[in-house]
Length: 435
View 1 (cartoon, rainbow, N blue to C red):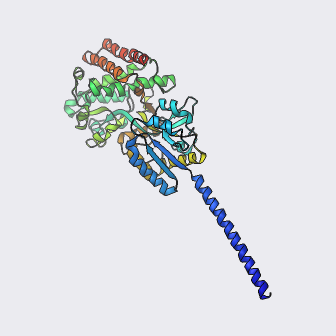
View 2: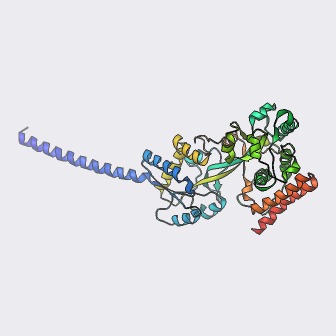
View 3: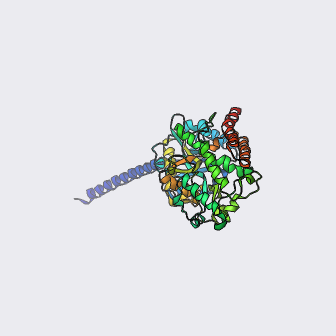
């Protein structure tokens, strides 16, 4: 081939190669742009300003790992609901927010995505802390929970000749408690701590243990309360009486002395004066230093089948996704949530913040009582929801019950117990009617 035509051939080839390369660059640039759009972003409106520092850390970790922007804005205390209402109207609304109770679901559930079947929902260890709207849509996923139950000192229990595995219902609990109380002088400790029916101490009975009546009433009706019912039947008050009687009659303090108050039940437990103590998961840090192997068991009260009972738990924080946000942002938000409950480092930070996360692959809780709650749920035991949170005008209602329990402690009998029943059942209807 002559030199000049060959040169023209090479020049044409190079021009074509340059054009192809230019087009390829354009395609790659467009593809990169589209890829960026598909990532979307997350905007989390946080209801609790005290969570902000940890959540910002988690957001930064996710952005560095995935390139997805996660913006977290903390509402000022007491302004969350009004801020959420305003933010949802904006062109770039929150994609993730909190719906923590039935009232919030009623107010904002209409714009929440149905989370049924999502990957993050599949990670749940239990659905006991989820919330549904009136149409049955899963609009809020539980992030954390608290629990209440009967706290046990396993070391003292074993010293008395029993183990935790022995106590799986009311009868073995009663047998152990009455035996320990009868041998208290010999053993150097008693069965139950004091249970004053005055002040904050009374709340452990009127706001926690009383849940056995409410819970089993729900179970019999095959429902769960999501709002305060107008009335209750009190069908299981005798079961409440059984566990209350067991506690006050096998205690460090005689029943009549519980009326005057002034006893420190937690101190009695942490100093090794008693095996059993009614309490809640938020007490674990104060207890674990003195009783590192402290465990929590259910409120056994003589109900058939209670061998499958779990702890009395209540959801605290719950996630909702904005169903009206753009598809890419919704997907980015669901991916972020899934990462939060499965990534070891991220979930450990969130567990440190919330105490526990009810998800299969989340980091384990450092709170022993919350771990116990998870273990019961994982074993297939039913979770008793904290119905006491729905008591009407709780301060007045609980005060009336505590007053009636005081009369009963001073003079135990069916006559004085009837005043307790009246305070619980009739009192509920009276306070609920007052709104």
